[in-house]
Length: 308
Image: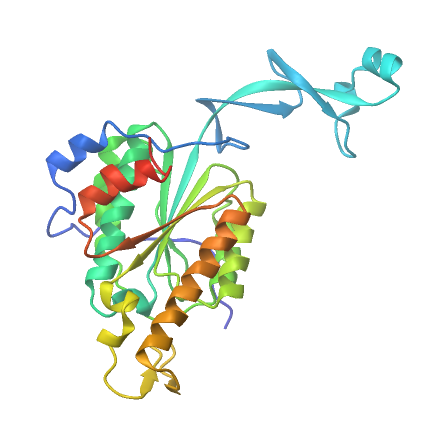
């Protein structure tokens, strides 16, 4: 049976405890999401100016004519002087959409649930920064089955809704990341704004690249936070034999690596992802679980250009 691509509205289950303290939320008020370029918006009437082909009140610039452009926007006087077709663009004010994408596959629950809990804490912290900056924030979970996503949230008070939604999600199962992303982009009508991906990034590189490319093609500014435990960065601390069990598929693999070789394989994998992000203008940062949440958000993310 084909999967239902319609987003599932998560039930409103009251969170047993608050993920973020009032003091931490107060400090988040001073931060804003860094925005390098707004190329598209989810709704008119916001505070970000972009240039679009078409008509509006305030003229912005000229752009080379492309097939499909409205011929009424062509500046014929400029054509008479330059013998080239240009269309007028105009400034429009838009609201910025922020897509927070949280990996909820089985690997996020290993080696302990603390990794997924930290991903939830980070998603709520970044979501609150977006809400405080008057953006439209939506949270989605990368998991098998029907898409799990919230409605767009636009006020600080909506943090409660996001927290309630988080409490209903537990990590499990596996997905082909690029296929999931394609479904989510279509079903949620993602276009423009920012996408913040929180994951251990333990996916096959080609699959991971395809997922990120899908977001870039929709004019989204992509930011990636890789969340790993110290044990995953030092795999010899997890080795208890010569057979490796895939947490998501259940398949087993006979290890042919020494602890040092396995550690180098992890480094190589992460560096491959980081190089890809650098080439494609994607912000990428690694977060270790032994780094305190508040220091990472308040110090590391501003230093790395995620926040300002």
